[in-house]
Image (spheres, one colour):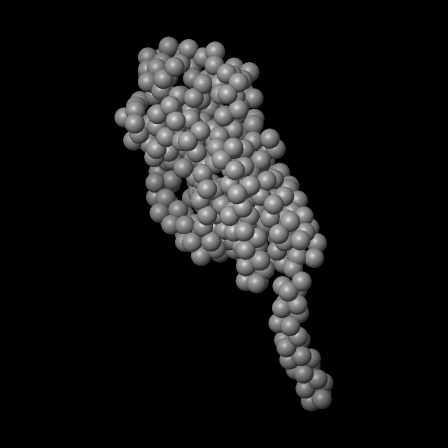
Length: 323
C-alpha cells in the first residue's frame, strides 16, 4: 500500500513538473492553426469591416489566418458570453464593444468582465452620428426634438442594440430636452440603416457606417456625438456645440477567455500593435471614419475596470426608467 501511495505521489509530481513545460511549448508554437475572431454584430456594418481588415493584416503577422465569425444579438455581448466556455489556448477570441462592460449592470449578464476575460488590446474609437433619411423633413436636431415634444407624430430611432452607447446617448438627449421618441434596437448598424433607408424608422444613431450613404445623398447627418467635429464630416456640429451636453465615443478592443497564457496574449498584442502602426491599416481606419485609439493589455484592462465600476450606479438607474 505504501508503495502504491508513493507511486501515486510520484506520478502527481511528475505531471506537475511536465505541465509547465507543455504550456511553454504550446505558447512557443502558437499559433499553429487558424484563430477565430468573434464579431458580435451583423456582417456589412463598419464594425464588421473593421474586424475583417484587422483579421487579414494581423493574421499575416501571426502566420495563421484569423477567421471572422459573426454572432449577433444580446446587445453585442455574445462573444463575451462564449468566452465562458472557450479553451484559453488563444484560438478563439472576441471583439469587445463597450456594452460588454455595461450589460452586467442592466440584465444580470452571466459573465463578469473583470474575472472572465483576458484583455488583449484596444485598437480604435468609434464616432457616432444622428442621421435621418435624405427625404426626411428634419434638417436639425432641434427640429427633431420639437417634433416629438409637440406630439406631431411618432418618432422612432434605431441603434445596434439596447444600452449601446448610441442608445444611452439618445436617452440622455431625450431626458435633457423632453423629447419623446421610441427606441428600436437592431442587431447591428447594417440592419438599422436598412430600416432607415426603407423609412421604417425616422432616425438612427450609428457609427461611421452612415458615411457612404451621406456621400451618395441617401442620408443626412444632423449631429456628431463626440467631443469635437470629425475629420470625415467637418461641417456637422456636435451635440455639445448645439447646446446639448451629451458626448459619447466608444473604444473597441479584443479579449479572450480567462486563464490565457501571458506569452500567447503577448503574441496577439504584438500582432495587433504592429498592425495598428501599419500606414495601410491607418488609411483603412480613416476611410471607415474610425479614430485610431490604441491601448495595450494593461491600459485596456484598466479602462475596462473604470467603465465597469464607474458606470454601475448610473446604468442601474437608467435600467429602471428607460423605454
